[in-house]
Image 1 (cartoon, rainbow, N blue to C red):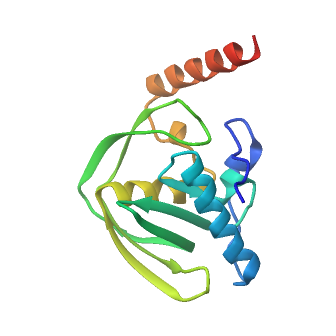
Image 2 (image 1 turned 90 degrees about the vertical axis):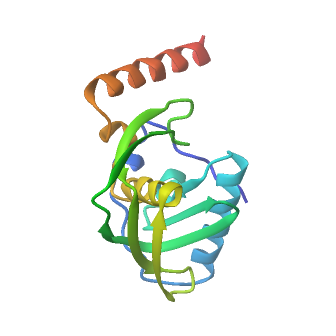
Image 3 (image 1 turned 90 degrees about the horizontal axis):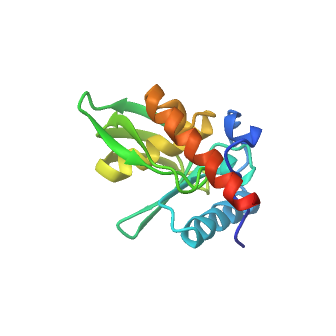
Length: 165
């Protein structure tokens, strides 16, 4: 079942998600619903707080490979970084440049509670970092320079005004 995506301005997006302690059917259903929601909105990643659940869960799809990470934690990051344009399902239509490490090692669990360790590079590394930021209450607007943030917020306000006109 597709879930409602919370948009910029909703306080849940700026709230740190709590660790998952119970690995049950509800968690399994949440990850499946998040994957469906992400696909429906043509995204590549989605964090649980983007659908109003303050649990440390993220999903991603890169090159047709699906990922569901519970309690993800970045263990290490490459020194090499890259600036790339990022969008966000919670701030539709807005793109900003964000600098991120090009590779990360992530640990966590799968929805059944089994340990996972993932070496992610390129797009997958960027997506995982973006979604972990969400779980920490950090948005792409917090990761870009001041001028880009101002321009993005101006564009966001104009879009909202146009929708409500």
